[in-house]
Length: 247
Image (cartoon, rainbow, N blue to C red; front, side, top):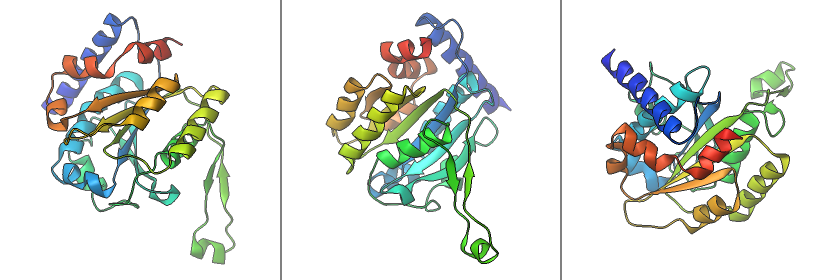
C-alpha cells in the first residue's frame, strides 16, 4: 500500500512539474513504453535497473492515461522482434521486467531496430491503420482467417529506452517522416542509455529534425532512476514536449 501511495505522490509531483512548465492540467493521453531487449542491454535488465526505470515511469501513466496504465512493448531487430508485453500500473509494477520480459519475449538478446517498434506503436494507438491478427496454424486448419482489427486514434506519448545504435536508420526516418506528414498525435521520447559514455548521433538528429520526437541522453542509468521525482521530471520535460502537450 505504501509503495502505491508513493507512486501516486510521484504522479502528483509530475502534475506540479507540468504546472510550473505551463500545463495547467495534464491532457488525457495514452502512454506507451518501448524497451530495447538487444543483447547489449541484458546486464541492465538482469540487474533490475530497467525495472526501476519502468517503475519511475508508472506515474506518467497515472497522470496522463485515462486508465492509469502504461502499455509496454519490447523490441530488438526486425518486425518479429517487437512484442506487446501488456500493461503496467500501480498494482503490478513490482518486478515487471523480471516477471514478464527477461528471456521471455521474442527477440531477446537480438540486434537493434527502431522503425518496427515505431510502426507497431502507431498502429497500437490507431494512427497507422488497423492491426492485423494472424490466424494460428491450427486455426487455419479449422478454417479461421486473418482478422483485421480497427483501432480508434488516441493521442499518445511513447517513451523508448535504448542502449544501442540502430541498423535501420533510413527506415526509421521514413516512418517518422510519414507520421509527421499524417499529423499523427503521437510524441516519441527516446532515452539513449549508456554507461560507457557512448553518444547517440542518430537519436540527436531525429530529435532535432522532427517536432514530435525528443531525445534525452542518460549516461548513468542507476543515478538517473535514483533521482528525486522533481529531478527526474526536470530532465524529461522540456520546451518541445510542453509545446506538443499544449497543441
